[in-house]
Image 1 (cartoon, rainbow, N blue to C red):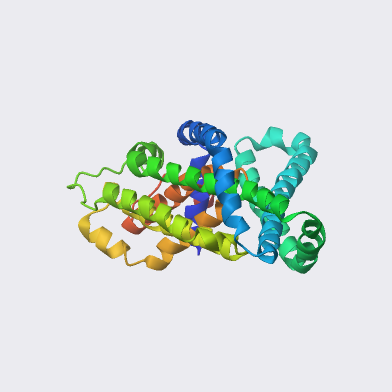
Image 2 (tube, rainbow, N blue to C red):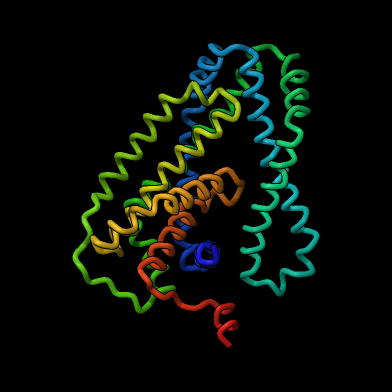
Amino acid sequence: MLLFHGIFHRSLRDLVRWPVLREVLLTGIPMMIVWFGIGWVVWDKLTLLTTKLISWAPFSLVKADGALLILFLIWALAVLVSYAFITAMIAPLFFRRMKKGYYYYSFTMLLVLAAVWAWGILANWSYFKTAIADKLLVWLPFQTVAEGSAWLLNFYILYGFYILSLYLLLAFYRKDFLEVVRDIEYPDFEWSEAKLKTRHSFVALRDALLFIVLTVILFPLLLLPIVNVLIQLFLWAWLYRDANFRGTCALYCSEEEYKRLRHHRFVIWSIAFFSSILNFIPIINIFTPFYAQLVAFHWIMAEKGVKATPTSDEMNEDL
């Protein structure tokens, strides 16, 4: 447990280092702009498609799914507004002294607020469902509810492909990203053995295509409340679980190490599922694919027995 805490903390610390953060921003922000542009172009056609599919579902199911999507939007807005309010209240007191601690604060605060608001909504699920699905949406025509759900579903689909595009970029340019971290954290580590043949590029493309195929096949299930969230959570975890591990091993593992580490399926899947959960949290989701890669990278280095540059806290403990 302490090992994993150290790995997750070190990955977060690396994520907010400027050389690493610069790579993340130069990748994530342009790709987000690209998908905003794609969404602008295909929005009307995509709305027609999703509205048509939703029209085939019973009104009771459309209401329930619409209520879930509306609650998800309310949850995201509540997280952002409460984060902004709390930050505005304490910023004058602490941020001048926090320096880089601001990033740790932001990450932790967003996680806590996301968990608190999610618990509050789930604890009062029956009340919210009745208020939205049985009182609000029932007064609206089916077509209006269907189109509203289609709009929210459009965001859901486009965001999924945004994550997929970041996955592909990391799959093919993983070395450029990880070498920045390696130079900082493991400056004495040199890898001179023959390159491990994991067919990573082929597997990454195969998994990306399978992700698209599974998304299309399972699309009708995205209309089922809760089930749609679980499906998306699993698909993202399935996408992450092999890419981060295999891609990192292709760069820094020997054949024996790769064969040994791939049996740690519980660890690999745990990292993938945790990363998938982060994909749902506003602001954090922009950095999630990179954070997931960092966690897998540090875990593999720890399993190899490579010592990282000690943090200031670790140096104080030694003293």
